[in-house]
Length: 102
Image 1 (tube, rainbow, N blue to C red):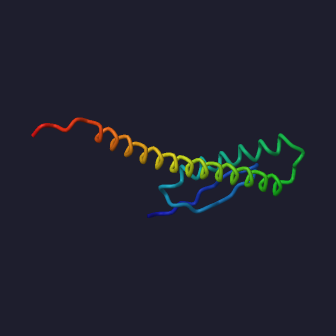
Image 2: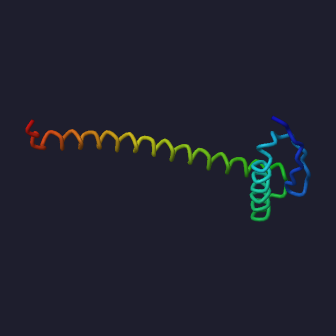
Image 3: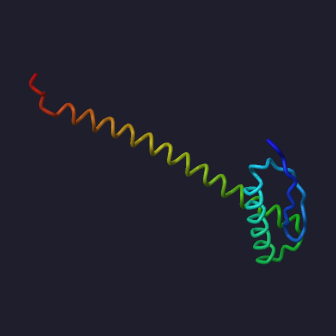
């Protein structure tokens, strides 16, 4: 797999990073989202120090990630409960159906 050097612009600064060729577009999109979020934090608060802006954006992103992980865990648990309920319903229906004459 070939690697490409990509220039990303975040808060007006250029960052040169190497990325697998098949991940370049995703990396660019991620960098654009990061730039958008950093501008949003910087413009929406009194925080002007880029390091503090980066920390706030990172904290927000990790919080969102943890919330998504929790939602996935909740969905998996719900799926297991629904599967168990479906098995119980199927067993109950089978118990109460008249036996077929052979």
